Image 1 (cartoon, rainbow, N blue to C red):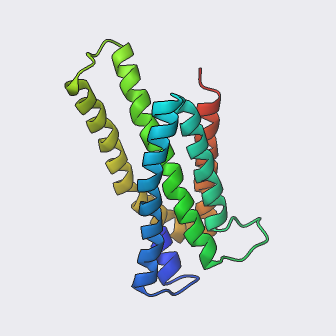
Image 2 (image 1 turned 90 degrees about the vertical axis):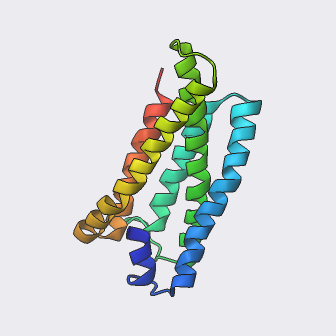
Image 3 (image 1 turned 60 degrees about the horizontal axis):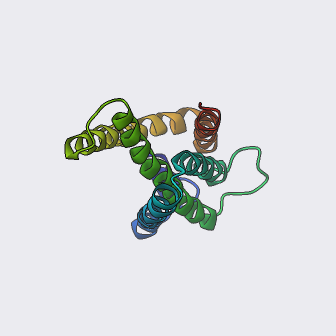
Length: 172
């Protein structure tokens, strides 16, 4: 959607291999981040809400700089794009890994049995929602980029992520 256009046809005019490197940075950091967040916050500390809050904060800061936001006095640099892609993968993993753990605990607290069927149901619902979001997001981001520009579209995502972080922070 939006970032690919920004890298290929917008600001940078990169060849496909370099565009792929940016997305590879995201997925590699997501993979490594999943191990980190799963072990540290979910297994060792049992602080899933802190992981989700930190993840949303990392994501918000990433979207602030990937544009960059119109009010930041910096031009778009390719190294910032790659850095924000890496941070986005790491932040996404914090949110997703902890969300699975929280959803599973809540399901068991609400009376679902602590067995494989509950784990499978929670996993199916969570990853179904993630897949749905991943399917709809490119369409919405393309529409936003065409109507308000890449920098402003990134700013809208920043605002949405800040709202998510605040909701997590002040949830009871």
